[in-house]
Amino acid sequence: MFTGIVRGLGRVIRCVPGSLVLACPFDLEEGESLAVNGVCLTVREARPGEVAMDLSRETWDRTNLRELRPGGWVNLEPALRAGEELGGHVVLGHVDTVGKIAFLGQEGGDRILEVAFDPKFSRLLADKGSVAVDGISLTPFAVREGGFRCAVVPYTWGHTNLRYRRVGDRVNLEFDILAKYVCSWRER
Image 1 (cartoon, helix red, strand yellow):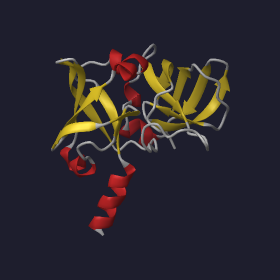
Image 2: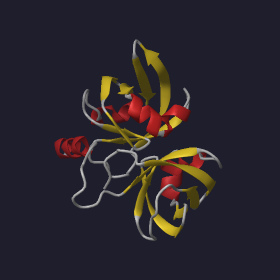
Image 3: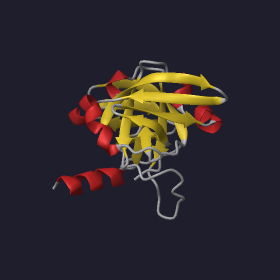
Image 4: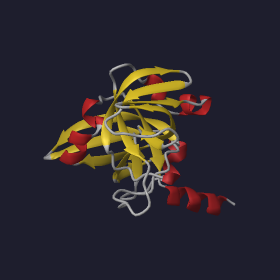
């Protein structure tokens, strides 16, 4: 389980079907969970400053990890440990879909991120609810069918890979687990 509070940035060393190797700013051990752009992965190998993880076919097909290139930046968050603060929201690392950045820029004094996504997931998003965008816990507003906006505070901008993103880039989206359970319950 994760919180959506990115703890560091990693740099892609190699990404091929079945395997991802990253330069990592913190020490991890084999078998630990690590959220990479919001995707829960298991550390296969850990060396000082570097981690390697396996990528299943499902992960490769369903996330933006297949678009990673050497030198690219990824958001990293180690798994939440018992007793740690839940600073963002409950994030499982199970990506629901990939959206596309429709707008990323300044409006007034605020930095705004707008994401478009497959409208079939719209029922899982609530205005002022929670959404993880590439593993970043954000609060959506201006929610509409197939899209939402989020304000990006300066701290988040400076400590995540959003500052390297551009309009048209694809981002992993994980909608709030509570919304998924409520929708599942109502649909039964």
